[in-house]
Image 1 (cartoon, rainbow, N blue to C red):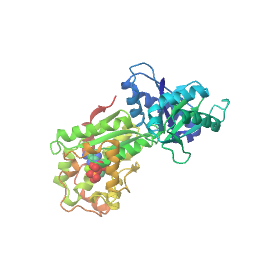
Image 2 (cartoon, protein in one colour):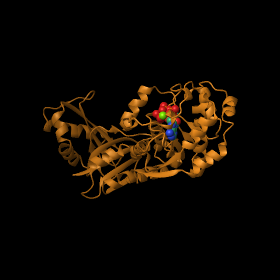
Image 3 (cartoon, helix red, strand yellow):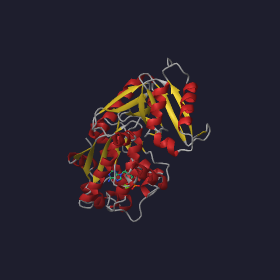
Image 4 (cartoon, protein in one colour):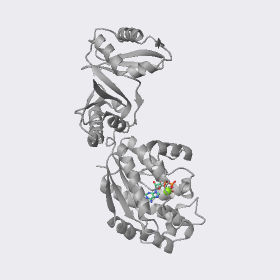
Length: 390
Ligand code: ATP
Ligand code: MG
């Protein structure tokens, strides 16, 4: 019996003329994810992507799990294929779904027929196969409204397929179909989630981490590398840029009024991120900011940090509650790593009484003793590149 994974495409179906290039992106991202898991045949027809084992080394369980993480797929299911004949379809349903048919108490058959040359209508085929299955499994009751098991049949161009209920895929759009952005990745809970959310909109991300050694440890850096690695099944391979931030933070400590430390530090992050964006062809900066969560995330504080750059700042978590963000982080698998107890540069030299409602000119004055251009250039010259994923 030949097993296959059917992946239904999401929004990309709506994209009219761009559709082909969206499909190509999705296929190439999916092939990339499957590459380490064996050999597969992957192709697209009628808004569905098919994944089939190419040899006996292919692991269909692992392929299914990987496909669930590929953006652009809205639903997926495992199926078995056979020739387009009502009795072949019935026999396949009995073989492929035997365990499920044995353990359910009620069922119904649903058919989709995209091959309009098939001699029976969808309803006729459902009734025929449903009747045969009811006879073969006498304990089963047909229930059209709340069946325990739905036997799905699809009659498509090249074959017929039998599968159980589809599961949700990762949704969104294929990474790479919507440009590039720089994502500020701390070791916290929020920024891996914001990175994931923007990747789901089809954006390829360049993660950037500001590193204040020795105030923040090697272990803190390793943790961020691990977070970036955990995101690669969704985001694809990435090059994490680690920016040396110690000198800037020491200069801020030595030359600026304490209540502005965090704000000035964040302005430096933005300037450096924008310079990296220019270099990488990125068109936006992504952060895990969340309105009101900390002193630097008031509207005035964000106005002050954003005033030093011209690129849009994407803040997908801005209106979420912490509990929702945590649930999200658990679901995508970054939470347990995020809560490992290492320092972040944001917790180095934190002011006792941070300014929460700063005026733009006050902040500019507070940083006026620093040579901003030289410090930014020095940090950029020391960037370390860490490749994650293949
Ligand atoms: P997170 O959980 O993502 O660390 P947070 O709630 O702790 O967020 P802040 O520490 O104020 O918030 O940081 C806000 C955002 O700034 C982060 O979500 C991240 O995008 C960025 N950021 C903070 N620290 C760093 C860092 N060391 N390197 C890169 N980006 C950072
Ligand atoms: Mg943080």
